[in-house]
Length: 142
Image (cartoon, rainbow, N blue to C red; front, side, top):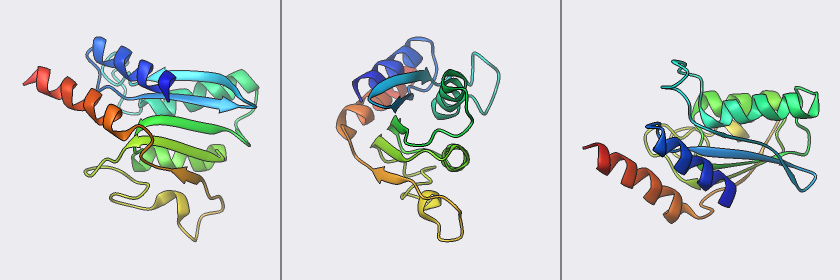
């Protein structure tokens, strides 16, 4: 989670909503990303989407079997759906997202019984620190 939090701080320094993500496969970080929606003029450039793209290229496969995705905030529906498509094994995330979280706050996308893949979820990992990064970012913008 240290690396994901570092990515979130990098996003904040660039004026992006501070969300960071990494993918670990076989005990190694294979990809890391921070939100780039503003810089890329791309509403899909969430840290999770970017890290999935980078990891798939790094391993040469669109399926990330056995991979763990660490992210600083609960993923939205788009990002949760992408994790299912990539067949990510585990999601480890920091703070819940009461307004857009699609893992347990607003929706339960990753464990929906009609989907063909389930993702193991570990919520709340260093949630206070992840929430603080977001809170400080938005406080500074007001």
